[in-house]
Image 1 (cartoon, rainbow, N blue to C red):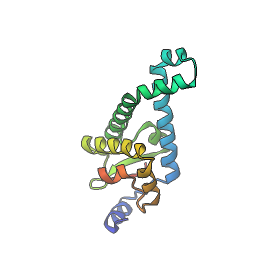
Image 2: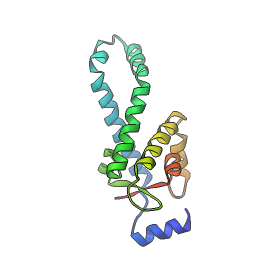
Image 3: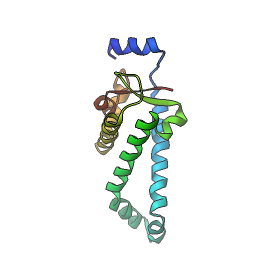
Length: 149
């Protein structure tokens, strides 16, 4: 990690969030959004006759699901500095420059690149596991860090 950033975090008493906490927050958010999609399409899911029809139904709404994820991630990150999963896990997103919750463009950038990372086999998330500052691709592009709340 950049020594200047490390000193800034240390001076403010801020510590980076553990990868396990981030993974659990991810799981909570993904579960919540999946249930929301199922709830929204409940009648169609119930009408499906087999697993193949459920998969086809899910694939039909993949773009809407991605848009929902972007809106969810961007809104909660901008408004609260954390998604519901991050709030439960007591972690938050901060801009490196200000050490405050991300502004609207940074939150939107982060949300969009998060979807891109997911699309490409979660490689952007793997990057975060190998990075000393635990920054995923979407953290790097938005110039953010995930820290303990």
